[in-house]
Length: 572
Image 1 (cartoon, rainbow, N blue to C red):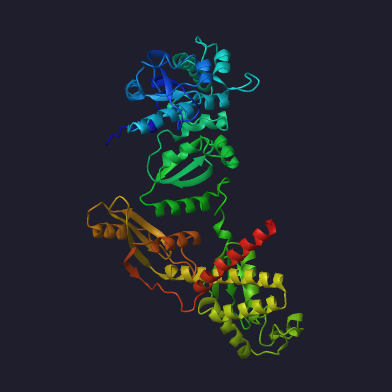
Image 2: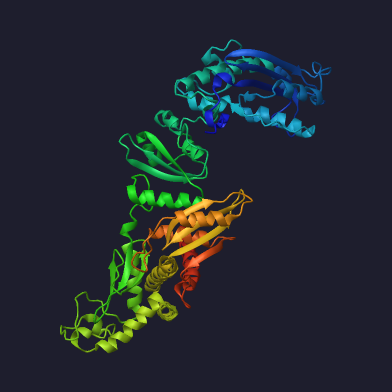
């Protein structure tokens, strides 16, 4: 077994092992753009012990304002023979090499140091920086101290040096404040530099204590599964780096209330390393569908998707169903909700006079006509006014629109919308527009999924970022296998191995795929990415001329634009 040494970022750097250089500056003013440094003071500490000190006056090469002289006690005469920043800054940077810089209101001190480095053409080292003001605001309440000034905190924590606006004295006082603050966060379970750097009181102690759940997780792409003490799945997610993503749940970067609750319940995290991002996305969908985690909001119940079915009977009608069957009927969908399916059905009924009653009719049925017949929106086959053959012509129009060329129906609905708008029935026109969008979305989705559902096997490849190829095998719309070929290697042996070991997949009733519809759509989006190549195709991958995809592509931006305008007007 090959052993891999973890990085400090993986393991965390113990605070006792960190070298801090606490720095303070005195300057001629408040802005590094038009002021200069007059004194640098710094203390180097590790594990609570002082390792060294650095102090120098700096000749700013300009007069020190009187109020600054009164504040700091540093006069223009005192710095006349002091080294200039050209020599003082490199000396300080050598003293601080390899350390974490600490300052009270770090933006001020580090800002002056960076400006001086830029003016001297010196590349600023990538020192981590801690700000004791930020930490104090998280840890010291107003009940304890009236503000978070260095003098106030030094008095609160009993610092051995009283800050007096001289750089080294203030740096010594800041060291005592730093150690006191580290002691406070230590009692809250913060023991590493990484935890201290990201510390915020917004992260609850309970949330922070769970950070051990990320220990040992791989720094690789894949899926992570949070589980409670009974092994129940709480949440499933994906990431290009499992460890980094899981660790973020215990920091301030995670602000979702439901995730804080989930972390409190979590007792373990199971990683699933994946060869490709597509595999990770598919595994996430399948796990969510299988376990229905309470903290995942999307795709928890794919079996509840609705389909619109054109029934097979003497006088067919549109019906909303939960599953596709091998019954010779024509289907569109799946729809994300029953409401969307109902809107699509209503759109068809606007322009095609299919019957809307639910009873089963025979050629010999005789019942009273409904109001739709009186309105001319149904030929009333229930009364015998319409023969099977006459009604079949209407059914053919509907069937052709649902699984073939939808342009005639789309045009008729747009014409109807225009007529309503001319009558100033804008609300009715908007309702019809939404129904039309639901219809073309359902048809387009079915027309995209159906070819993959019917194909026994598709093998495709895409160039991988680190080199090599991402390879996938798709069978009846289901991801059957995926792999990553080595950089520079012939991908064809990988393809053959993948084909041999891929999952055997039986077809589902057409046009449903043998997978969760969201999975097939993710595969479709992957296949449409730039650079994807079809290696082998068993079956046909086609879409009908005049299919709903074009209408959807035109209608969705139009609806979005109108909704944006309406929202803007309402907000105004």
